[in-house]
Image (cartoon, rainbow, N blue to C red; front, side, top):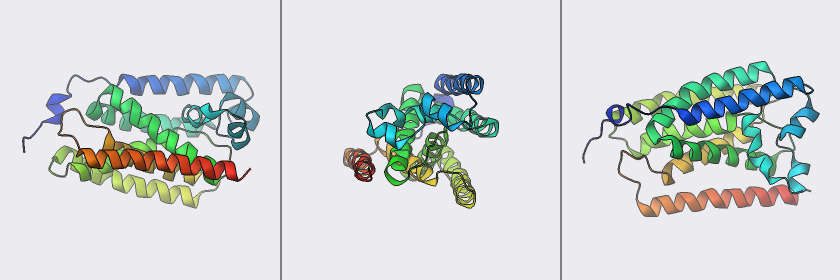
Length: 227
C-alpha cells in the first residue's frame, strides 16, 4: 500500500472553517451577554438552544444552532480552546469542506439524541467536539498503518474517557448529547473520505451512512412520542 505523508500533503492548509466556527460562537456569546445573559434560560431559548417543545412546534433548526451557543464564560472559553486545537488538527487532515460536514453532523446527532432522551435545555459546541474526538479515534482504526492517525487516535481515546467521566460526575451536563455527538462523529468518519488516503470500502461507507440516518430517525421518533 502506498504511503502518504499527511504533513506534506496538508502543509498549506489553513483552518478557515475552524476560525469561522470560533467567530460565530464568540459573536453569539457577546450578543447573548448583552441581551439578558448567556446563562439566562429565556435568552438561550430565544437564541436557539435545544428546547424540545420548540422543536415539536416545528423549529428543527434547533438541532444545529445549539452548537454555537454557550452557557457562561467558562463554557465558551473551554470549548473555544478545544475547538481551536482539535478543529485545526482535524481540518488539516480532512480539508475545510469535509471538516465542516463532520463538525455539523456530530453536533446534529448529539442534539437529536438529546431531544430524544432528555427534556433539558442544552447548548454548546461539545456535541460537535465529541464528534471530532470520536472521528479521530475512528480514523486510527480505519487507517491503522498510518502512524500519524494512529498516534492521534491513541491520544484522543484518553481525552474522550476523561471527558465522559467528568460529564457523568458533574451535574448540569447533558451527557446524552455528548454520547450522540461521539456516535455521529465516529460514523461520519467511516463515510466521509480523507482526501489523501484510500477510501473506506463502499459497503462500509453505505452501512455507516444508513446507521447514521437510522439513529437520527429513531431518536426523533422517540422525542415526538414523549409529547
